[in-house]
Length: 222
Figure: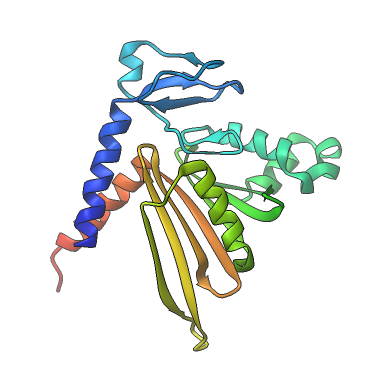
């Protein structure tokens, strides 16, 4: 039942995205919205291009879903305070090996409401489709509050018992938002008691995940 309900909401999100129009923010990023472009931004692309959106409105620090890997690399290089000494000394190629050391992923250190977090950016075909933010569980309330301030009341909130491989039990609180641009979730514990997480997933990524899940479910077994 839960899977069917999620599929229904994902379908609604995709319909909203298809009907969205592209805007350009003050940083030159393209994003999609089914409202008029805010003042200070501009509409972009021709009607034929707008019919096939490549991004959505989810963003972190001005980095929008659908951004290129080059764009994300440049923003991490600019915003990550831990790279201050390397920025002026290391060539771009060396910095890229530090920031985007993994295949189809880049990583940076940021602050949210005074909380230091590690942010991982995931790509498909060098297009940003997911963001994962890792933090200390003691900062769960601060970060959840920041999400509520930005995205409003969660679509779903729940609490369940986490059991680790070592037999430790903990109350794992979580909230999620299903938006026209994709899906956001925050967990006090990300499968372990020393780390919490926030996940941003684009609508396209969620749709592909659901399709794969349904295909796996219907695949014949032995």
